[in-house]
Length: 161
Image 1 (tube, rainbow, N blue to C red):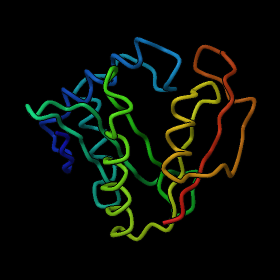
Image 2 (tube, rainbow, N blue to C red):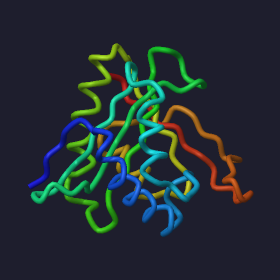
Image 3 (cartoon, rainbow, N blue to C red):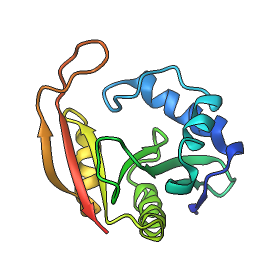
Image 4 (cartoon, rainbow, N blue to C red):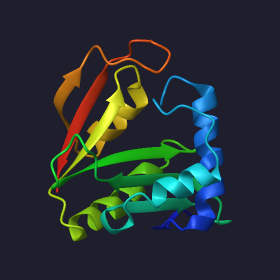
């Protein structure tokens, strides 16, 4: 059983461990490591009145995924940037879809009209996930590079709320 609820500061260590494993695996996120609970807690505190943070938990209460939507300086004020992470080995079970249902509802309540997902061009699973939940391409940046100079490109997908 998967439950989704708003994230709390006490979830930050589990969220950080999940993200750290994804970063260590490589090839999926543009976020650099290391990431710890204090980093996640600081991210959650950036714009709490304009952000949506949710966690997905398994039957034992362990965090198996999380998603946020928040303002971004490169987007208009009626748009939020979204990011999604699911624990390695838990993908394909509907975790991301359940998280998105909660995130979309909260984003609407916050007054956002659309969501932007910026995905590494080589992240096939991320591109597939966002397409499956209804996002469509609206911009591409084929020259986008990672911190180490690797060119991966970036695809920006949009979901109208």
